[in-house]
Image 1: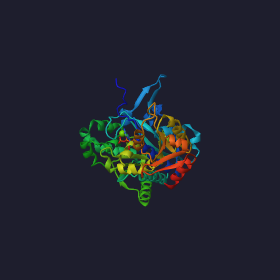
Image 2: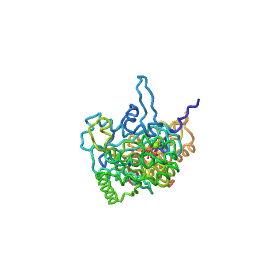
Image 3: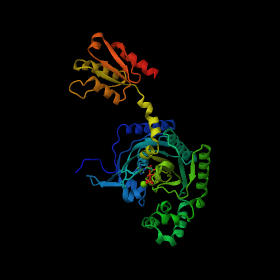
Image 4: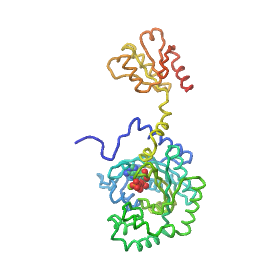
Length: 428
Ligand code: ATP
Ligand code: MG
């Protein structure tokens, strides 16, 4: 038995972790500007929460849930998404209903037992928002503007918001009937999944990737022609807003999300360089969910960004530019010439760190390694400066400082150490 990580999961560490943290930081800044507050919900929840919200006919519930009985015989699961958890928390805690419109964001891992492939993990990460308590198209526009800001600040290029309107409980049932009637004569030619969808949730046939289903779908009536006047108006206002704020959109009349709770305006952001798994983020309105999960009726909308896909959609050069600033930070390596000077080196190191200066030395040998080997280490780690400490330095109470970029070497008094580096940091 190997002790490697599970298929479809991934260890994330330096240097890749830098871009992860950077994108999380960018998102947090944007959330703050738009006054969204963070929420952290548990990774385990009752399975029934997702069965009731995401929908029994969806791929997530049918085949992708990590669901099991715990020792108390409770059916629990690893969350496959977080909207349901956030809504559950919103209903559970009065303190979360303090603002008329509660705007929340989350960052964390999600779990789906899918076939691992490029862009599809079993543990993946989402950055998402939920805005609960507003029916206004301004709210839909705000979350899309916010998402657009995150994408721009993350240097994602060539992306587009595909949007569609899935209608509401007034107009969608009628459209469902029309779809069923039109599809019925072609039922035999649908794929086996779509045959099931026909009864469970006919709308999802529109989204099937199977070629023969796609051909049938291309001739079907579209939701836009059956929207009630409220849905039509809402969508028109939203479209105008998005065009005013220059959000790149494309109407996609076959866009249906893989989760049942969506109503009204729904969208997916696709990036052209991602290949088949091109969806970076997805979201929309879910005006019925709060009520369906037992809360008082509250209209809501939100989205989730797939963090792994966001990272894949940024060019290597742009990733370097994004994290470059961090790499430029002042980094100092302390080199000691022999065992006698090592303790002094350790004290210098501590003093630098106490002054918030990033510094390191070599502990790898029980005894001090050669000057050459320590200099090589300093170079490998990208040190901007090396402080060299030998017997002469101790006797004369000085430190030799080498600028690794210019190769210039100078001596400074020991008690001027932090002054020297603070001055250097200011100059940078
Ligand atoms: P897909 O059509 O790719 O299966 P979905 O409809 O299941 O997506 P959502 O549940 O809406 O996706 O999740 C939002 C975003 O999370 C997706 O756009 C994608 O970027 C990301 N995502 C979803 N599932 C995975 C996965 N298994 N691995 C990596 N990222 C994922
Ligand atoms: Mg999916």
